[in-house]
Amino acid sequence: MRGYNASLRLQTAPPRIHLKQTIRILMLDPKRVRTQTEEIARRLAVKNFTFDMAAFEQLEERRRSLQVHTETLQSEQNKRSKSIGKAKAAGEDIQPLLDEVENLKARRSEAEDELRKLQEELGNFLAGIPNLPDETVPAGADENDNVEVRRWGTPAEFDFEPQDHVALGEALGGMDFETASRLAHSRFAVMRGGIARMHRALAQFMLDLHTSEHGYTEAYVPYLVNADTLYGTGQLPKFEEDLFKTSGETPLYLIPTAEVPATNLVSNTILEAAELPLQLVCHTPCFRSEAGSYGRDTRGMIRQHQFDKVELVQIVRPQDSEAALEALTGHAEKVLQLLELPYRVVALCGGDMGFSAARTYDLEVWLPGQQKYREISSCSNTRDFQARRMHARWRNPETGKPEPVHTLNGSGLAVGRALIAVMENYQQADGSIRVPDVLKPYMGGLDRIQ
RNA sequence: GGAGAGGUGGGUGAGUGGCUGAAACCAGUUCCCUGCUAAGGAACCGUACGAGCAAUCGUACCGAGGGUUCGAAUCCCUCCCUCUCCGCCA
Image 1 (cartoon, rainbow, N blue to C red):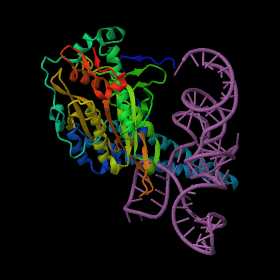
Image 2: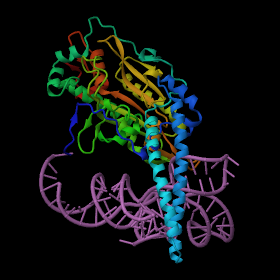
Image 3: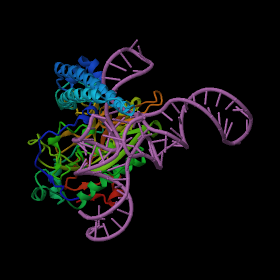
């Protein structure tokens, strides 16, 4: 492990796409893109994505005729080459055949070069197309257009002026942003004492809940992954600037979420029907460069370059994925309920949804310090979008064929934000923090941080 | 990091230039026979992309990428990974 230096510097050169990758990068059923182009353009518009139909159709038409042409030439050449062996064995003159092959070869390699270029172009084009939003996804530009689905709990009334987590944390000596920025950079935090312990307790509590009550299998995964893995879940090629990249000879990236390694656990595999569903839970740090969010949430721990998250991932049969999204969202909600934190569930509108998602619910927890509901979990069904990119399939007993699985992911929950929520919701007039009942066993019975 | 040995289809494992998309065996599917807590026989049995209403056909794939050749799983180069021993380390 030497030569891997995480760098805050952004490397913006677009990753190269190889010929072989162009096929696997298809986000949608390629036949569907070809046959239902208009429908797809309409749906993508909900995500504020303009699908250039004319460009696509033109590229696709050229690709098709060129591929047929190339393969025909190849086929001819193969036939000649095979007959050379036979002619030789029969003692015939092979020179005329050699000449023919020569000619075919020249034409073929020319056509091949052109095809390669075209496929690269097409691959780049397709790799940048987001997943189709579900028909039920509300139209809209940003979070203001999200639709509230339900609320749980009631924000507490304080008989004093509630403080935010920064004031609380610094007063308790448990949060230190200045030191963190000296050690690293802005948007990092140092935690100490009871606050650091509660942070750990939260992660432990979540892991235990999901493994013992919700049927998830705990997984430990790499925090650095390669480019293929990030293509698989959709972070690449479009969002490289959001990632931290190492500078080794084999570039690796710090994971922006455990969704990336956890979902890719099934990349390039064919699962048997009996193995599904797969439910995985991972606790990992997450690293995000937060490019393009310079002015937002600069205060406190809301938006960090490094934060911990407990992530839920499910790999399911296609017919089960809608129900799985509801279940998974419920599993994340359960954490908030047990912590007795008021929250609401919103269905994301097209403009606020991620690249890979077909449907997303966000969980927003009430933060008294901001007098606002803030995102603490995002639960998505990506359907077969990631599965196609990473070649994750199952053998469908009805058809006997390998078909893409459906993948889902959701935070269960973001640990740093959960900590903030507990601090702000459980604060006392004297600035101390009550420990939620469910966390006490994880904190040696401690019932107050002061 | 050093030395050595390897990477072939679901598994085991043949295959050193053409008739090998790949023997054989195991597993699996279907059928036949027989009949009893199991044996025997036959056929089928990889993936992706493309053409076609379809039957079917074409192309590619033997760790990855490149090269030699009319032709490469087979020869050459680079890289990756696995295993064994040594070193180092948590």
